[in-house]
Amino acid sequence: MTTPFSPPLYMQRYQFVIDYVKTYRPKKVIDFGCAECCLLKKLKFHRNGIQLLVGVDINSVVLLKRMHTLAPLISDYLQPSDGPLTIELYQGSVTEREPCTRGFDLVTCVELIEHLELVEVASFSEVVFGYMSPGAVIVSTPNAEFNPLLPGLRGFRNYDHKFEWTRAEFESWAHKVCRDYGYSVHFTGVGEAVGHWREVGFCTQIAVFQRNFHDSMSNAERLEPSVYRLMYKVVYPSLSDNNIYQRTLVNEVLYEAQHLRQEWLSRMDSSNNAHFCAPPLMHLFQHGAEGGTPDWQPVYQQGGTICVPLACVWSSPRVRVLCGSVQRLREELLEDERVRMSADGTVLNLPAADAEEAEEKEEVEEEEDVKAVSVVANSVEEDWDRELGCYGNI
Image (cartoon, rainbow, N blue to C red; front, side, top):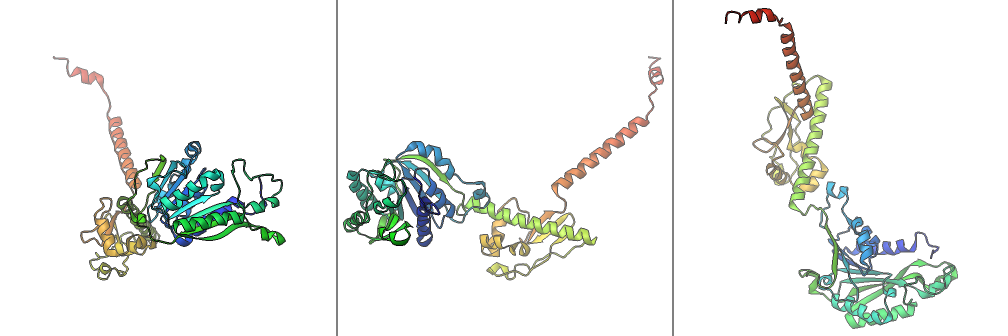
């Protein structure tokens, strides 16, 4: 069924959840009825502080088909996020008690409840609000009062809908949930009618529940699944992993140092001053060790080495964000074998010639040696009669 909304109604529902997450920044979010994982993909893209993102659906075939769309992209490895993110997909029902679903900050049920039998709604309420007891719950469902405004619609909006509530029915159920399980609720929606039809309310009605009490489960250790079936799990690269942080920092430092080295070489070539040399910089960290900004010093050359003061690298905004202080930067670099530094840890040492240039020079020297040998060999005249005559008296 098509609806006269722009953007489409399903996108407005997803955006509502995204805006809520952006405002309240829950760390642990679970989406029931995740189906093709569309909302999960949007949430993992926007992040907004989410550390654990879980999807649950009864249809394992759909999950198997769509789960790899949640895998990290190349950009996630090249630019790891600051915070951790784990994504999990489970096959299971929202009416089943699963220990690993407890302690979440936000539960979303977007266009889910109407797919349950009416007799299952009580179990849904008890599991989500009673057993799981999350900090907040977002429930969206069709508004039956809006249906007459939808062109060509007869009956329910989807063949699998078991019921569709009016606003009064939806609000009656929500208020009972609040009384039974200690929540407060706010009603809103997406897809508003125009003109005098506005009195029928939103096309999709939404209830946002907030828990009225503190739950110690939010900080409790998470249990292993015992009812649901784990279909997919992926841990995204992040700077909270020490190995990834170290690799990212060193890569940024080496990139910046190579950039400064290349700039210096280009400047020297243009000025024909390739033998320029500055003195060693022993006083670089007079202010930097306390976390301040060290005095800027130029790049210089000593023999076959280009010396890039750490102060120059520290001027990179990305390096500053990653490290926080010059002293910490120096300590991190001294621990990495990929980085060549001066004895006092104030200068990065880079070769004056690129590896490719060195290889080309070596190949040229080898070719010249071969040519020299060939010239000598070609200059020797072969006289086999004389050579054999030397053995005539044997």
